[in-house]
Image 1 (spheres, rainbow, N blue to C red):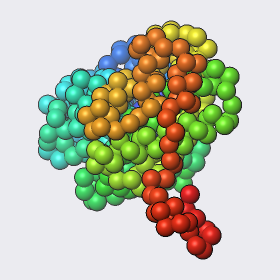
Image 2 (cartoon, helix red, strand yellow; image 1 turned 180 degrees about the vertical axis):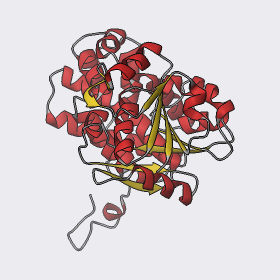
Image 3 (cartoon, rainbow, N blue to C red; image 1 turned 180 degrees about the horizontal axis):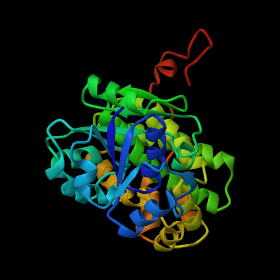
Length: 348
């Protein structure tokens, strides 16, 4: 049994609290919002963000960051990406050398283009920082619905330690050394999910959704591998797996915000109606800047930026995507160059 500090009492932090408590661990949950902590103490349920998911009576709730961090066997950092740096800065003085921090938020810091683990490592250099990601809506994890996820860490020992803590009969955990790839897949899929929601809001169908998912993972993989991520990561749980669930589910705040934008609402109106942090909005500009830095073409993400920040109509953005220059899907033209694949199987 481990003592675990959950830093952040939003839907994901609460869902993981339920999972980890069911696994037999001792939990302390922190939030900077006093009214949120008072509600959790009183109701043992987050009625706003994860209703009908009850929390055990022996979980400790606190606004004291020292109480939630110092001496814990493991820390789970579950605050929205815009607050990762400030929260890590507040935690730093209480984190011991080698203390494991598992970041579960998804995003890229716009001002620095750092992944969130890089932000945490800069603020808390003494920590052993890992990431947990994959197709895992809090609403389902909190209810014990079978879920599969991946943990990325700098060492095999840390990854396997986290795997053992989180793994259960309803929560299967894989391990990976590709921390960068996992984080990029997690952050960039939120931008593509906005596009999928916009298409839904415009009244488009399954063909459009399939196109966005397929070409979206191509964009994510292009940028991710250019930055040093492993291609297989983007076709795994934190890539195509997370992209599918985020583009298809109404649990997805990014898709819900996209639907509202497709229906004609502004970005600010959509975010206000969703009432949660829409991570894709914060990652969209950073993704475009990374594409320019690494000279990678990201047409879907570029059009999402045009809609969000330059007041381009969603319908015009879709049209511009459809009439782009003609492309080949597979870049290897050797079969054509050799007069075709003689065995008739082909590879395109």
